[in-house]
Image: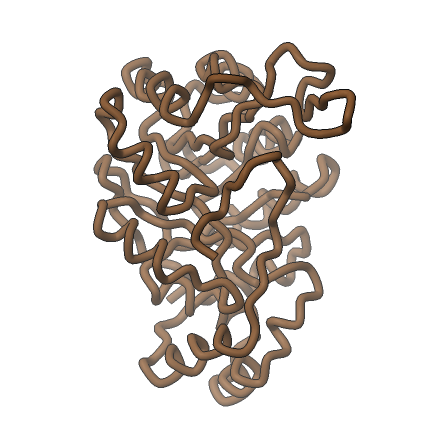
Length: 302
C-alpha cells in the first residue's frame, strides 16, 4: 500500500500510518535517514528533544524540498521541562527550524528536577533519579493544554502512559483536552491489548514505537513471522509493520539504512489468519525493550 493509510486524531489532524522513528539515530546519520525517508514517500517524522538530533531532522526536512505543510512532525517534551513545557517547545522549534509541530507529546509521565545536577538526567547523591516532589503528570498536562492556543502545536498527546496513568490524567479536574495520541512500545512480544482497547474507548490514538523489537531482536526470527514473510514475499520487518497498522496503530520504525528505510515503506493488509498467528507469539514470549528505572512505576499494565 506504500503507506497511503492515514488515521484521524481526535484533534482532527490526519496522521500518516507509517513514519520514521529517529530514537538512537546519531546527528551524523539522522540527516540522511530523514532525507531518504521523505524522498521515499514518508510524510511522518518522529523525533524528541532528548534525542539530540532535532537540528539535523529539521535541516533534512528543509533540504528535502517538500512543503512543511505536507509533513507530519512530532517532537516531545523532556522530563526536566514539565513545569515549563512552552520553554522546551520553543527550544525544539528553534532546533527544528519550524514555527510549529503537528504533535507535541509528554515524553514520560515523570518530572525531573529542572534545577538538578544535569540538564537531562539529574540524579541524587545515591545515584537515583532526581524527580520533582509534589508534581505529577496532571500538572504537566494542565500546562501542555495551553500550547495549542499558541499556534505552535496542532495536537498534543502523551507517551509511555499506562491505563492507570491515563485514567488519572483524564479524571483530573484540570483536564479539558483528551490526549490525541499515546505513543508506547508495541510489538508481538508486547501487544498491550488492554492498553490498546482502553485508548480506543477513550478516543486516544496509539502510535507504536520499537515495532520490530530491539536491534537484532529475535522477534524477526519468530517462525510465525518468517513463515508469513516467505509465503507473501515480504521481509519480516514489513510483516511486523503491517501487523501494527492493521491493529489500528500508527508505527514509527527506526532505521538509518537507506535500503531498510525504503523497504519498510511497503506495508500491506494482513489477513485475519496471519493476524491471529502473529498475535499468538505473545503466548510463549513476552518482552519489554524499553524499561528505564525512573524511580517510580510507569508501566502498570504488564
